[in-house]
Amino acid sequence: MMRRTRGTRRAFRVLIATDGSPSAQAALMTASAFPWPPGSRVRAVMVSAPEWFGGRPQYVRIALARHFDRLVATTSRRLKRYWPDATVVNVKARPADGILREAQRFRANVIVIGWRGHGTFRRLLMGSVSRLIVERATCPVLVVRRRVREIRRVVIGVDGSPDARRAVDFVCGLDPNRKALVTVVGVVEPVVLPTSGILPASIRGTLRHNAALMTKELIRRAKRDAAAAATIVRRAGWRVRTEIRSGAALVELLAAAEQRRCDVLVVGARGTRGGLERVLLGSVAAGALNRSSRPVVVVR
Figure 1 (tube, helix red, strand yellow):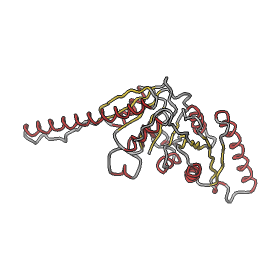
Figure 2 (cartoon, rainbow, N blue to C red):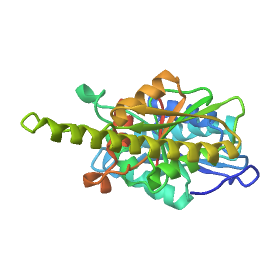
Figure 3 (tube, rainbow, N blue to C red):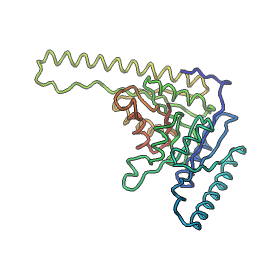
Figure 4 (cartoon, helix red, strand yellow):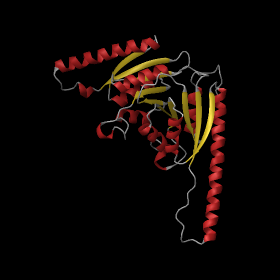
């Protein structure tokens, strides 16, 4: 893990994806409230898919082009209120492909994007573009449902995994606010024995004892990981506290975010478990994006 201290903080390159929608405006305004380090550069990208223009009458193509020109101008004015040197680009590509290519060209350290569900599944699924960006991006992605005016309370989920350590590094790279509070949360899922009613009582007792020992070891590791992360965050200039919770990882992490009334939740893209989590988003990251009412940063 990177040991960041005051004075060694690097400027960010922040790419904000926008399409003029309310969720995109919430993302832009939330990005303006983030404590990016001094000297950070900001660019907005607007993507117009080629199929929106192809095969349409000329007057429709002209109207669409003018619409995007107006969006670019409006976005540029809004950006320059906060970042006078900000730029806006309009690229023709499929939305996710265009955003990711622009992130690569810009060498973005973080992508900011709004979240939109669709139809009946709005509360259950991420917007398709947001989901693709988070799954395919090589840098952290800030996904915003609703605007946050100030970053005063941050919750980081840690589990000892490399992505969780990078999540800690992401927060340490921000410009610290001594009035803000970072809560480092570790969650322990107690070892639960399968139904063993047919086993002799002596064996059941041994199993329970071993399960208790395993749970105790998990708690010890969680405390160690949380304490190590808290030390690094504190050295970076933030006020910090740790919290160890017991239960299902996603449920407890979301509960901590709600109870702490956090302004942003920061998680690693993948946890320590195997299976599909080696290929797709970890279950905690995906669940946080689907269910959290607060902005979520997914870090890898």
